[in-house]
Every structure is written in C-alpha cells, then in structure tokens.
Length: 350
Ligand SMILES: [Zn+2]
Image 1 (cartoon, rainbow, N blue to C red):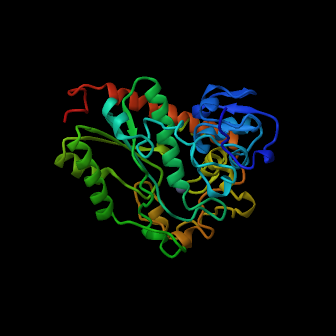
Image 2 (cartoon, rainbow, N blue to C red; image 1 turned 90 degrees about the horizontal axis):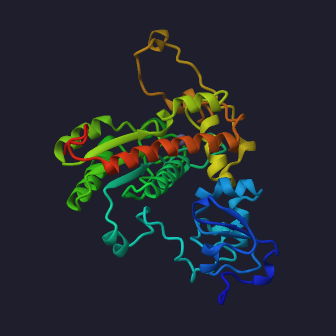
C-alpha cells in the first residue's frame, strides 16, 4: 500500500489479522481486500473496517479487546478517543454503511432510497456502579445497526436513524447526571421525526427501545392517527423470551445479568464489573400493591440502593453474544418483512 494509516508505524506489532466489515470475517495475514483497499499498514496486527461494537464478538474470538485493536490499527471510523493513538483521520471512507444515516450520504440515499426507518431510543441514567450511563443508547444502536446490516444483506431497504439518547427517568432524577425527558417531549420528538420521514415517502418506522421507562404505546396510538406512517415498537427486553430464559441464570430488569452480559459483549472496555453492587431490590411494604395487575413507578433509589435491579455477577460476554445475536435476528426478520410489505398487508394500511 502506498499510504500508512498510522504513525509511528514502528510502534506496530508484526503479526497481522484482518477483520472485515461486520466483524464476520477473521483472517490471517496478509490483510484481506477491504483492509488493503483502506490502506492498512502491512505490519499492523489488526485491521477493523467496521465499528468496534459490531466487531466485539470477532475480536473476542481472537483474544483481543476493541480498545487494544484500535490502538494497533483501525481502517474505519474512530470510535473512542482513548483508542485512536495511531489513527490517521485522512483515511476513513472505506467503511461507510449505507444503512446507517450518520455515515451515508445524499448520493447513496438517492440511488438506494430506504423504505423502513429504524430509530434507536435509549436513556441516560445510572446502571449500577459498573455499566456506563450510555448503556441503553449503546444497546439500542447496536441492535438497530446490526439488524439493519443483516436485513440489508437480505434485500431490505432500511436506514438506521441517530439514537435518541434520553428517556423517561422521572423516578431517578436524584441520581447524579441522570437526564430525563417527559412524555410531551418524547411525543414531540417522535412526531417531528415521523413527519419528516412522511415528507420523503418513508412510511414505515421501527422504534428499537432499550429503556423500560419508555412507554411508547400511547404516543404511537396518537401519532398513527395523525400521520400516514406505520410505527412499530420493538422493546428488546421483551424479544426472544425463550432465548432469554435459556441463556440467563438470574435475570433482573436493570443493569442485571442480561444488560451486563450484553455490554461485556458489545463494549467490554466500558464495563467495571469489580465495582458492581448486588443489584438488590427492596420489596414494596404495601402488600396489597404486590398483587397481579397493580402498578406504580418505583421510587428508584429507595428500591434499588446501587441503582441496579438484578445480580450482575453471573454475566459473561458469551451470554451477551447469544442474547444479542438472537435479538438482532428477530429484529432483522421484522425489517425484511416490513420492507417487503405491500399496503393492505395488515397492519400496514397507511
Ligand atoms: Zn439499561
């Protein structure tokens, strides 16, 4: 190759491994074609064409962390400023994903107009002491982008919008730096996003929700009567219940074994498991409210002293990968079918 991606090249280790787009290929030296085209340094150890999130599984299979690999060589985008020591920002265009709106461009979208938009929606909140505040946003984005990648490979015309990083956290506002948006704000955001899509002829929208405090049903009922667009909600924590039951030993519902496993798979560099609390849940004292069918929001800090709900100690990256793969397969199936749907195929009427 004529151009090195990194400086100083002398700092790079000699062994070479190539990881191609989507993290689906792990090859030996010399680099595979995608890496060579991107100008990979011939002496670098890893070449990453896709983002670190999608490649976490592939990296784990060769015993490397995303951060370590990014320090060595990265042909694609810079995902973490802590990991970009050797990244030359001049070379970064080989990794554009047509199904990710923040990466693609007007020419590509004009040539391949999408039919289905996917909106990841998270929250910015404490996740016990060991997971990042961005956990829900990272998970929602990862589910959406990987599922769209699979769906696009199956012929779906799909585009993933930027994540909404804020959710309804009204019961956690006493926890430092938790940011909450109320239902009117969420409704206004969703309405304007849907209205924008309708103006461009995109009339199918899938919300990929990663935060249990986000309740979209009332919003969608209202908006779908206002706008000619089919809006679908996919709550990841309710998807693939059989896999969830089979994979996990003691799932809870927040920063627990399931979420910790997902993050150990997706972003192990952001997990400080040694800091985790037990995720204890203090039971309601009013017995009459513990019967089926009754609900009131938990005063979070009082019910969950470390903010977690469920013991994270049994989490593993392998469990996270199994769960993640099942969720994205399910989501990809829905995206393919929605992309192929004709008006009149219930519930797609408008
Ligand atoms: Zn979460």
